[in-house]
Length: 235
Image 1 (cartoon, rainbow, N blue to C red):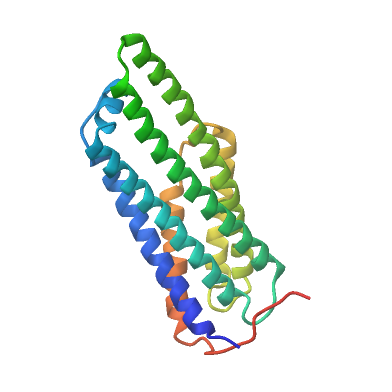
Image 2: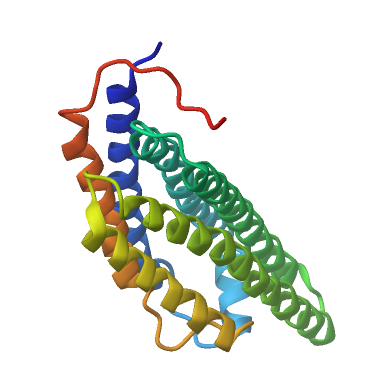
């Protein structure tokens, strides 16, 4: 026996805070740090001790957002599988957890590459060395495209499966679940068509608002959720 209501509430809070943090960070990120126009200027600026610290702090904050989303997936599983055990919920939750772990890795690796390559650029003693650092940096940053696609694959699949479960859940219903399924199916199609480049149009911001609505609904549902209930299992 355990406290289901508390887990759903914690998951909802973590989800709301995570989405709001993501929105704030995504909007403010372009305005943080010195203005640069070339890769050389970028590396020279962000390789300084001050901006190395700022850069790593930003990436750890983005990683923290993904950890909050991981907690939210666990809370949502508790809510969606409360009445009836569901394979869709279990698989969807697993995919969501993996997606969050992938993004945490991406953020830490990305921040480390940016900082260390900036330091290497400043330490270079000749123009040829600096050009080599720039070329290596651009190549390493291309790996971000693969990381991002890996995250999207797990993340979109998770929400599509959970959306199907929402169709029959009284706390969400057909409209809520249907919108989520459509949004993430479209997002997956756009990503596949544009891969490995970012998609155009990008419906990520719209999908983020739907996810925020899911977490708000979790908090509303937690008020009437049973205090204790056996852990749902699938036979």
